[in-house]
Length: 336
Image (cartoon, rainbow, N blue to C red; front, side):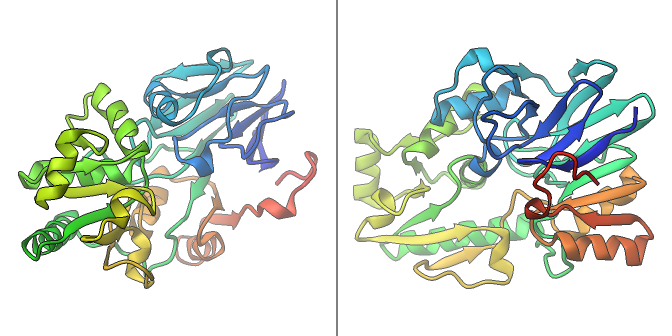
C-alpha cells in the first residue's frame, strides 16, 4: 500500500481503511483517527467523537492542566509504542519541543512516512534533542526554514537572560518573562533553577502546566503566584516572574517585561523591555541536518518558511521537495 498525503483539515494520510490526521485543526465530523504531536493550542484541536485521539501520556497531562477532555475519546501512548491500523504501524518518537512532544513514523508495507510536528534538535534544559527518523516521505515543520535563523548557543543565551534579570533586580525591578505557558515557561524556569538561587513565581496556566512537568519528573521549583509566599517575594522584589498573560505579574508597577522567542533574531517587539532568541523549534541548520540524516525521497514542508525551505532542499541537496498549502486543498480527492 502506497501512502498518500494531503491536507484535509490538517496533514492527512490515506490508508486502506480510512484516514490518519496529524494535528488536525478541528476533528468535528472528521472520519480520521487523530495523532496530536504536542499540547500547544495551534496543534490541539480537541478530541474527536467516535475516533481516538492519540497523544503521549505526558502531553495528555499538560492538556488536562488547561482543558477538560473526555477520556473515552483519548488513547494515551508512550514514545516508541506501536499503534496498528490494518496493515500499517504508527510509532511515536521524541520531538524535543516540550514535555511529551512527539513526531510520528508511519510504516506501510512498501514505504515509510514521518510527520515531525514542531521539533527541536538540540538538548535544552527540559527536553532532549529530537533524532532524525529515516523515511521515504518526510512531512516537516519549517517555522524557521531560512538561513537567517541560526540560533545562538544555549549557554550564551542563558547567560544573557540571567544577566538581564539580575540587572533588573539590582535596579529594584521585577523581571517578568512573558512566554508560552507550556514549554517555554518551564525552560526559563529550569534555567533559573539550574543557574541561580533566585525564586521563580509562576502565574495561572503556567503554574498548572508546571505541575504537570513536576509530576513527570522535571524537577522544577517554583512558587504559585496565588500564594502568600509569592506575595512576599513580589513585595521584596527578589524574584523572577513567569506569565502568559498581559495582566497580573505583567502589570505590576515595578515589573520589567521580557519575551523569549526565535523571532527575536529579526523582529522588534513593542511594549517589552527585552527580547531573547530562545526557541523550542529547530533553526535552519537543524532542519537541514535532520533531512540529511533521514535521507527521504521526498520532503513536504508545512508552516513558516515552507516555500523557501523546499526550494533550498531542491537546489542544494537535490531532494524532491514542495510545500503543502492548506488553503489549496479543500477536497479529500485532492491529494499530492
